[in-house]
Length: 557
Image (cartoon, rainbow, N blue to C red):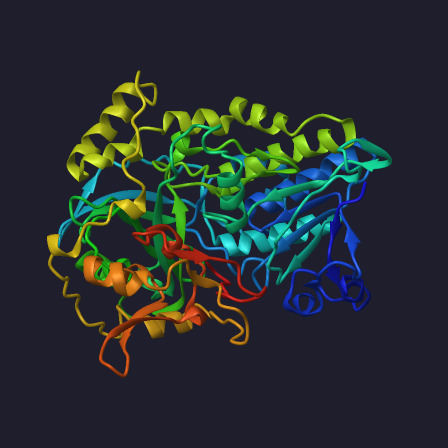
């Protein structure tokens, strides 16, 4: 029963009484190389998001029911649980009802039921109300970063150990294997690693690629979008708790898939954001500036006027859906949540499916470790679950927009109201996002309005509101596979798109002493959104996990 996780001073954190998911613990827990002090766990979960914490809770519930015990550890790269978690979020409680049936009787951060649900088509100066395609009855407007903090306390009450501030690189090995591959008398099976890193997880992507899990799954590549979000405090007379608005149309062009959201929480808070599919063509487009422009729409500006921004952030999300689900099982573990990609695009929801996938993986892990079953049970049960049914019905919405906004809206209406998710065909995705970018010569530069400092803001101001911070004295976590590509390819052919697709201005071209433009990487600004890892035309940027605890410091996202 030995699977070694190399950490130091974890026992000291417990003896000192520090909360294991707060910043104090982060300072006392760190990775060490071989030959040092170690701690052994039966299950290590990488990522303290909804999927990882749901898996941890479910594992401990199963242990209690069977009167047995498995040691479970959750590692989180953020400085605190929730610090790197960002989502809209209109929360569907289906999975939580299964995991913690009596959650409504507890003091949870799920307090604001959806009270109204509107769908707008925006032109430059008008908002046209359309029939809402969403069914949010029984759902809640929440902060996902607050929800996972509550889930972490529930996990710890069950005996799960939660450690933030970890840049994880995990391997799971059998113990007691002879040189010829036979099992010695000391043989003990390798333990379990569940990867719950979120969208475009570094470890998950390597494992999907190395074990060809995409090919042994549904077969198609993943597609992505970039979500940019602010949380505002608005005037009391404008605040409508539970109000939900989604929009399509302006400011995006007819060839770019995306839309916006405006959600009213409690305490006069409002979540507002823009989601832009990363298969957009125009290299001069800046998703950040499109978001700032969106907020100036007359119907939106009047909501925000007189308010203040509390927090800013950005994160990519999976949009591939059913066609892009990989086989989530690898030797020694499994991939869960958004690392695998279970977002329901037409619902614009993925928290409930992420949690359910974690619960299914936990059940398979328990049977594997305690009863000698196989983790293939996770893959089998996933295909029998309501996740599979839900994503199958939603499979044609996102690829319908490969043909443009108007054909996409028409095909989506046919899929929803006529076929009801049971069309006799399955549409395929277009080119991978990084291949979709056109040459700069095919487009004209976009002149974005200057921020007014009241509704729209420059990047440094927004970045300050994200509480992003990295230790300067560490190896760079953003690496160029070929350092000549930016000046040799990206700048002359694509007009340096990395300076615009990044919502934190990590990448900028500056003149050297000879007047030549050179790419400068401001890695300390990184929001961990992963857009660069996805959108770079030549896939030349490698996003690696920085030193644990670095990155944004979200509290209400």
